[in-house]
Image (cartoon, rainbow, N blue to C red; front, side, top):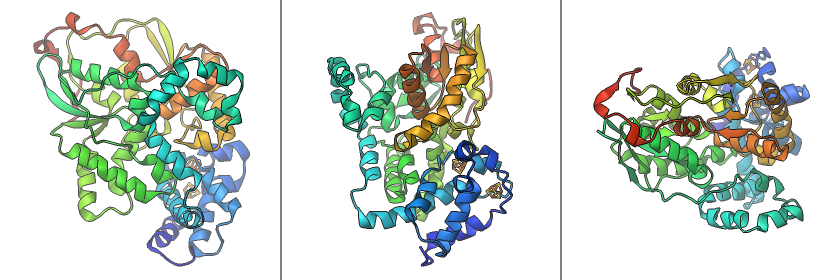
Length: 438
Ligand code: SF4
Ligand code: SF4
């Protein structure tokens, strides 16, 4: 690390922007938990600066402090000096991982990331496990815990029969535009209901929807785990998958992936041409709630009333610049009688944070607990979140505590409340509700 590579120079100059004011500290979930400087953004930046200059060696303890960071970037949003904390921690992890890999090329995180990107392939086997009674028997014998996969097994939602995915879905009525849907590695495998809801609503609004076959994992987990070359490879595959589609927008339904897609132009290691391609792609990326809410709605496409209360969790990724959590609320306000309440302390990470909930389950649970308590106080039977990782984290804990709260993506709830297409007016009756996203 003492040798001044380009990355080490970036680390030094970015870390030097920190004026040590400490304004970020109250926004940092790990600092709030343990009140230690080494678990704060300011502390981590100081450690990274010392690493980059060679003042400190990468001891296991130091690496642990960096590894405990959720990369929620709450500190970045609070920082008056505009320290690019996200890039700083990703670059530091990449440098440390290079050294770690040299010692152990088959290290755990690599294997986990490969497994995540292959979720879809594992799906039939997991469905058989859940549906055949084996899961019940295994849980009674605590077999998943004994095999060291207890948490992973609990996080897995019940997997329904996978719908037959098509490459192309036509618009309902006259077509007004074409969009492509980013499904991600977890979407098709674990959250088919949200994808189906998104396709249905987009189609009702007059968009044809394409699911490019060769799209793949967004690569966010890889970047945050210190594997930027893998992240770059996945990004290039996605650029190739989407850029040949003549679409007005690329829609994502998982904010954790979406923020990463929008930040493709900032990925390390891109050639100039690749960066240009990434910029063109990123301009087309929209979060589903924003896209739907800012589209023209057919005059009589009115959601049915729902007399219920929904607590709304806002994922960290949806709070990053370029994302708009307010659309989650305005979209759901279309449902008459539905009472919406933001979950208190939405600015603080729930602990899911990509694969953090698997790597640091105790911290992840400690961060989730106040949110579960707040949910209990609200007595809301519905919890809304636009990120699959947060949804899995909440759902597993609520199931464990046998609490009857349903965890849903906003578009899944909205789609449930929409009338069937036969009851809808023709596209000619469409009227403009708000500005279009393009
Ligand atoms: S990214 Fe989140 S956990 Fe990491 S230092 Fe910043 S606020 Fe703390
Ligand atoms: S708010 Fe910014 S400048 Fe202040 S300590 Fe935190 S990272 Fe450094």
